[in-house]
Each structure stands twice: as structure tokens, then as C-alpha cells.
Length: 171
Image (cartoon, rainbow, N blue to C red; front, side, top):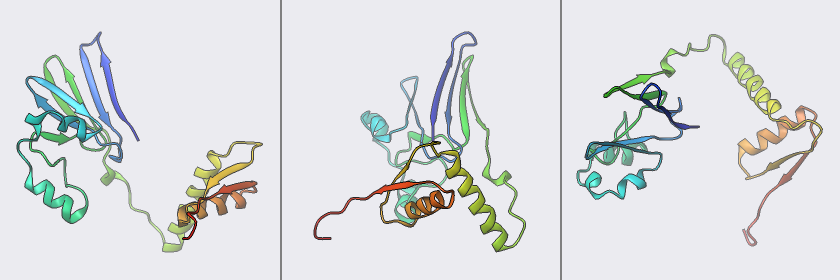
């Protein structure tokens, strides 16, 4: 998850980029000749002129789907930088370039069992990559399946695990 700003004074260039999954939204607005950007919409909402015109379609999509489609936001004057892309400002020109497209990922070829085995191996490797060698591993247990799956996989890898959970008395 990232949002990035890179200023290259030598080339008179600015690059603003979003992560490929769009996990860290990057909002853009043009206002009084400036390009404003933020990872938090509420910072741009502090400028009243940016919130004067609402985008009913984006609001409807958010209400129905839980998120707006494309690069829409609740305001017509604020847009979202598409996931996996960057905006480059150089020599007075603004260009948006996509560096990642999830549609380029080849579909898995194989049976359901093969897919599950491949997923588990990747999951196990991701956990193994984060193990602190020679240390007791620690995990918070939220009660969810994901936390339990991490702990079980750590134990499968032969790791000693200490878990912590919180309980509100009476529940």
C-alpha cells in the first residue's frame, strides 16, 4: 500500500503514483491553477469550492456497491487516480500512465484442488518470509478465520507461537 510523490528538480518533473491495488486512494483536484492531491478526501473537503458540485452517480454507486466505479468521487471536481497508475507533470504537460493492469494476469490453469494447493503454498511462503528467526512468533487473535489460519501455518512451519486476544467482560 502506497501513495508516492517524487519531485525531480533537475528534470522539472513531478510524479504522483498510486499502488497497484488502489489500497491507498489518491485524490486529485485542480483549484485556482494548482493541482491538489491527498490520500484523505476529507483534506480536500476542507476547501469549500471543491465540494459545491456532487457527483450523484458516484454517490449512488457507493450506496449500492460500497465504492464508486472508475475514478469517481462524491464530488465532480475531485477525482481518484486509478490504481496502478501515475500522474506525471513535466514541462507544463500532465500525463497519466498505467503501469499495472490486473487484466494482464493470466488465469490459473488447473483444477480447483491445484488452485487451492498453489494458494496455500504462496500463503505459507508469505508467512515464512515474515518469521523472525530464533524468536518466538506473536499473533493477535481476533476470532476471525484469517488470524487462526496464520497461527496454524506458523505451527505447521514448526514455530513457537504466543497469541494474545482481548475480551470484553460479559460477552
